[in-house]
Length: 330
Ligand SMILES: [Zn+2]
Image 1 (cartoon, helix red, strand yellow):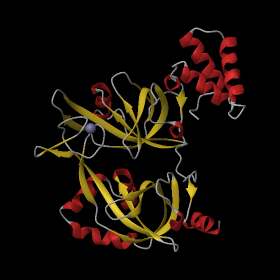
Image 2 (image 1 turned 60 degrees about the horizontal axis):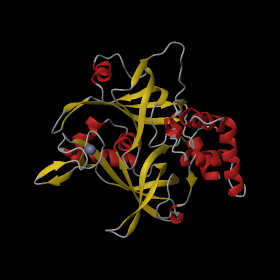
Image 3 (image 1 turned 90 degrees about the vertical axis):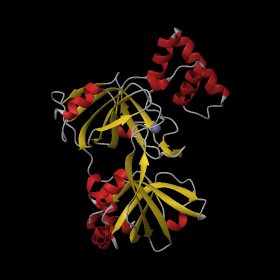
Image 4 (image 1 turned 135 degrees about the vertical axis):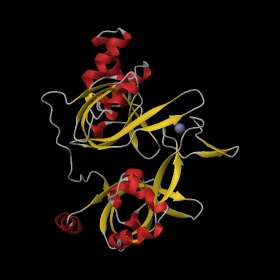
């Protein structure tokens, strides 16, 4: 479940609790017997570790992007810089600083990475880290902003740029590791569910002010915008795009944020921001996108105000005609 093997769990318990292998295995056997062998040996080991207060998330081992889970600490990962974002300055009551961010990819997926340490950010500003660089990151931690998982690298983090002999094949082919459904079959709270449909309506992007640290929407407080957790910060504008997808069984409103908007429109954030001043420029893009078929993977939520289901896009997969035919034939 957490990418940790049975042996690793046992050795972690041994290291933290100073009890022998035999004792640990006995506890695991007892647990298995108690649960009438309904769970696996790994599952029983997880429960025993939990009961002993041993945090398995703290195991340092190199992971792949797909295996990252919110709450993990001491993460080691190697990936290729797919997209480097401009460094952003933020100001809070008691401190100010900068945050650098990028999309990092490996053969299993892509994740947004945020850097908080001035020395790391300097590497970005001085162009030592560029798009295409390979980075080995240590001591990162994984957080979720409610929609996406993100890897954070703070001042305990370490970066190795272009480690010798390391090559990364970034996954550019879409992986279909999601539950495929028809729009009419979608249920509230479905997660990682993918639908193949046609864009039948698309609206101009809108923007909201988000916290540069946690990406959550800023709320008005005494006439000032602030983050519930981080106080008054310099807002980052995050684009939101609404569209309707139809697959013949029904249609659904799809809401896409930030990276997914960039990907869908094939434009970077600066270009997208220009639609605020010149919404009429969006007409041409709308024409290009209407009728386009794609797979949207996401989470189904209920919009209480309008009493309807909406799909929050986590991943947008554009299919080439060959893949499309294959998907449609299934
Ligand atoms: Zn915040």
